[in-house]
Image (cartoon, rainbow, N blue to C red; front, side, top):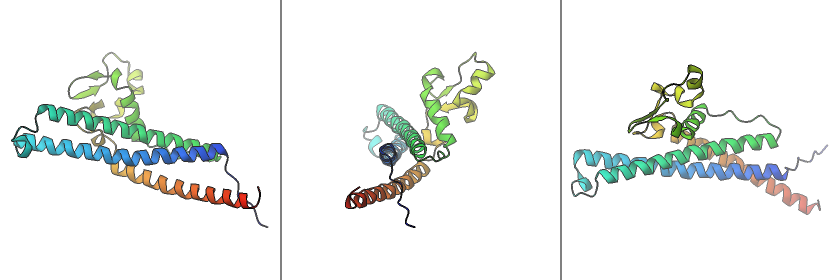
Length: 197
């Protein structure tokens, strides 16, 4: 008995497209994040040693601040992109009647901490729990799960909890899987057209 494969719904195809959108975005963003951090670290070293471009004044304190701003924004964008990828993977699983993939806990905590960064106490080094919170209120804030209950602002986000190489590898695996599925869907549609369906 020849069983026809189930034709995916439009919602499933659309969710698969968005999984690919965000998986590819994670890959691009991880590369941009690595490059921004590498530039920042290189310039910091040269500035501290008064070496190379720093010796000629091409690297100064404003350069270091600009590097920090760029690296921070690129890493935070990586966190948002990875979060969107997880959301669309869950939606695709729902459309297929499957259980959603396991959520990456460090990613969830980092996203929540960054989303509520403006609610925290801030100084030039760290964001910490606001004073006056009850233990129950403090426990609900993602930052309470971080070492020292602080998000250090003077270091890359990746040094807290996320490894961009792992995030990139996972995204590449998702892209490959979704590409195979999209190719299979396209092939199935072609067969259906040939059969007059």
